[in-house]
Amino acid sequence: MYSAFRQLCEQGLRIPREPEPPPGDEAQTRIFLAARNYYKYLLVAWALKTALSLLVIVFILLGPFLAVFFNRLHLDSQWQALILVAEGIGLVMAIGGAIFGLALVRLDFEKRWYVVTDRSLRVRDGIVQVREATVTFANIQNISISQGPIQRLLGIADLRVDTAGGGGAAAAHGKHGTPNLHTVWFRGVDNANEIKKLMQQRLRQLKDSGLGDHEEWAAPTGVAATVVSPNLIEVLREVRAEAEALRLTTAQRFGSSSQA
Image (cartoon, rainbow, N blue to C red; front, side, top):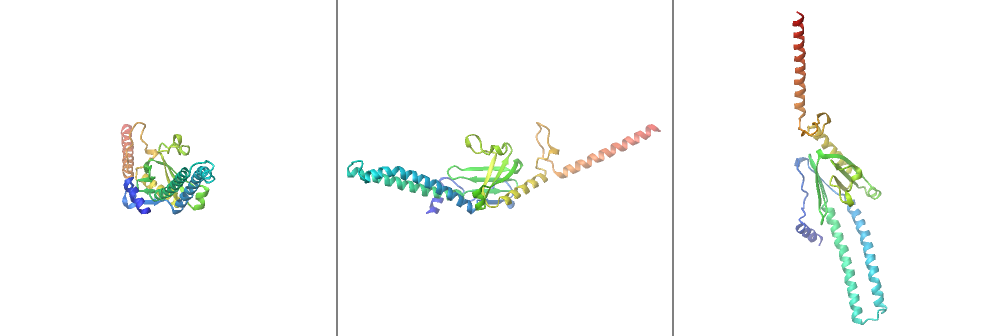
């Protein structure tokens, strides 16, 4: 039954079956998924919310049920039966909604993807409200790992990636609790350190290739930055050294000629 529900959601909500990697070298693409213990974490959260909701519903339905059962309303048998049927339908709908919510929890876990290439990363989560963000390594400013007590018990953690314009740790969320577009999360992974080291390695490779933001080669304000390869830089240094040597030799010759 769940397979049919998943296929229906994939077709109706246009959810891709497999992760779609961002631009980059396919040979260096790594796909990470949330850990199985993160699913247990989501199940616990679902169970607590569902139990609280069912308790509220049962408490609301209990009053009319007891009134009908003890005949406190002094109604005809037909009205009493109608009230009991309505309460039964409400209880069945509440249980059906809880089961539907459980299916959404599992589908949300399965459709949560974290893709890392040699140039960028892509994070996707959500079923009804899909959230997908693609970030290039050139815009990454900070990578950090957070882990709460329950996550530590389950052996999972959240990896946070801040990009340019994110405003630092204090800006994890925008106004009124809306997600910050400059921050992406790898939630519920059990290999956060491995993913962080991979990103740091790719960042170093990006800078070593001349695509990074080197301060010594920063362009003046208002001038577009130009990508300069290390080989070209070395050639320019050699040309400058030869020019200085030629200038020094010319100065010495003119100096000796004037003395003569």
